[in-house]
Image (cartoon, rainbow, N blue to C red):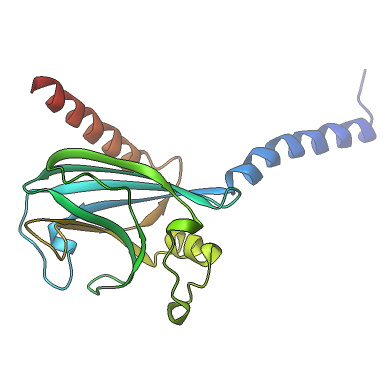
Length: 188
């Protein structure tokens, strides 16, 4: 028995709606990542073996950013960590502070959620509210900077860039780095 064209149309519409629904939902969140190192610190690069991976998930529906920063080999304790507005090679103002690290050194993780309460607006830079800040984070207009006791201007810094769920290299690097950190902590 053959399906009528009306039945086929209904099946195609249902199939389209089923496929379109997850993609519309996925557009509510965007993940950005950065690999931080001393060579990207501005105004002067830092010679350091320290590095970090930052992953921020911007949730437009909730109006918040989930933050995860894994830092490695920090020779001195963290004093601050921020997301700044700015271009490579420039020092820009702080957009928002990242969760505190309680002055830890070595290998560590910073996790938390950023919302409008944490935001530092600057209308002269086009960041008037949370929506502007979220757009800046996903629009290649921000960087992460981790400051330490040894380098008050920044020990490591990295440019935030959007990644897709299929960006296997960036996600695999983050998973491997976190795995290495956990192994090192177990050996202590």
